[in-house]
Image (tube, rainbow, N blue to C red; front, side):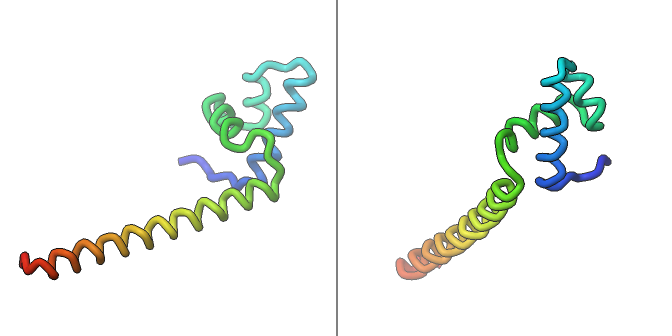
Length: 91
C-alpha cells in the first residue's frame, strides 16, 4: 500500500505540479515528477485545488468535528426512539 500524504504535503505537490504545467509540461510529466498517479493528482486537485495549507488544515478539522456531531445526533435519535417504544409498552 502507498504512503499517505498530509494536507501540507499534498498542497506542496500540487503547487509543484502547477509550476511544471505552467512551464509547458504535460500532466503526465507533472505526475511523474511529484510521484503520484494521474488519478491521484486529479483527486487531490478536486479536493485541495486553490487552498492554502492553513485552509486545508481547517477544512480537515471541520470535517472531523462534523463527523463527531453527526455521531452524537445519531446516538440521541436512537435513544429517543428507544424511549418512545418503551413509553408505548412495546417490549
